[in-house]
Image (cartoon, rainbow, N blue to C red):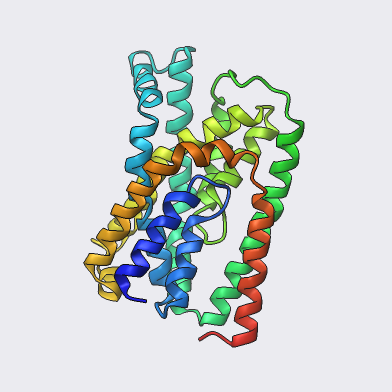
Length: 278
């Protein structure tokens, strides 16, 4: 498959999977690695693809974003807008503190690891995410909170942000690790998804910019695949995200994502061990 065709496929995957409790960057990593590219290149492209989804999310959540910005008038008050603003700022800062070191370690590890080792590691992380998703699904079925609850407070924001930072690792779903603590804090499924996806807007921007900043323009990735496929990847992910976000968000709370991540994780480990990927 040509690099452009791979970019189109990866863009479609990003545009749909980003809004589900399944790791889109992992799916893109596997797409490019099975096509012969290094796991490091696939991982970085999986993060870059977030920029496309960010543009779609910026438009889709524009009303919520405008409401949040009104919290700047009195950021330390107890208005809903101010609480939401503090939640997004605190959680995003914590995400960066936790996620950036993980990105640096993972990118170097995947670039140096053999195909078998990298695939097995990703498979194990997918199995761990499957367990988190199973817990999330059980909590969602029994949650009885109010979907109109206020945004999380300071401690909860820091915890959720730290959990989101862990999603810098391949195999770990951002949605899964942010919705679960929200449910544990007593939010119902609707409120938990809302606060998780609002937090996804700055997270998508940060994830997309991270390889560019760390790699000084993404030189290593561009050298591995070229500029044109990256541009196609971003364009397709933005278009597909915009076309599918409403539908995907509607089914995200009912999808058995624990089963999906379990199957992908088992297949990743089995294929690595069976075929001795290099």
